[in-house]
Length: 356
Ligand code: SF4
Image 1 (cartoon, protein in one colour):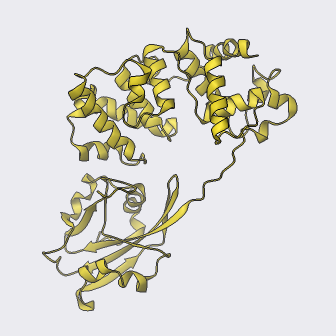
Image 2 (cartoon, rainbow, N blue to C red):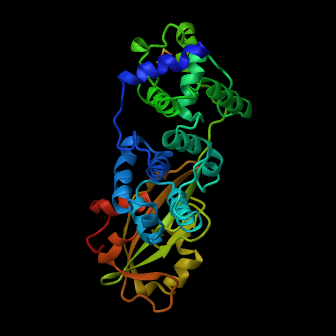
């Protein structure tokens, strides 16, 4: 079966092309862009972002010379913002230190910021047809099912076993097509739920199909427990102005903007929020503000975290001159890159008053 694997796969690929703007592209910069955008992102979601980046930054030096706030704004809504920061830093590194020439070997590509083994293999094979097999969730699923492998895919032993098998299976002469084919096969034929076994060219040889294990594979050991964090945002409303903060701390959403934040250990409780030092700094006495509206909790799920945000709309007569936030005109809010939980909140006018 190992010998036939790539033959069957490439034959399937010939009849199941999924046209994508980056397919067939040999420009390593554009391939790298598409791969970074598609990390942790569905193709349909990433597509407009890829087109926007290629249009705004057709060459790597255009991206290198762009302002960070602008890059973050283009990235807004895609999540995992460290990707955008790494993208920008790497564009600068390639432009300034490598004379704008994208690295050409797998090892050098793997050394780029934000590029792991999967992305390095994808770029090396798509741009230069180098024989490095991609191994991601799709590949784990396809290989575990076809070869009936029950080693957990999130164990060290499993990772080694799948990587070794993937390296044996890759068609070295057609590495680019092979990698594209196995990803497309996992995404459209051997899908996580309801794989299309009926029309599958591997059906007769597929160990899990023959043994009725399809629903059980691949096997995972750990389930990530998501830690909950409670964010209480203060939407300070004073005439046409409000306050913002840029998240520069080493934490989620680095370099994105947000409203003044009070994080609490428990779900929203106004009494608890009012006890916090920031509240006391902004509102030293009770007569200078009015709470206009408190939103229902909004959720944003991240890889290891669940953010539960409450927005407290507060009117004050005058913004104190001395405070640690950026004072901006409310009409300029659109110019700032926010995390998704804030953009969704601002997009839903029923959640706040017209004051905002
Ligand atoms: S037969 Fe089903 S489980 Fe096996 S490779 Fe094909 S689609 Fe996947």
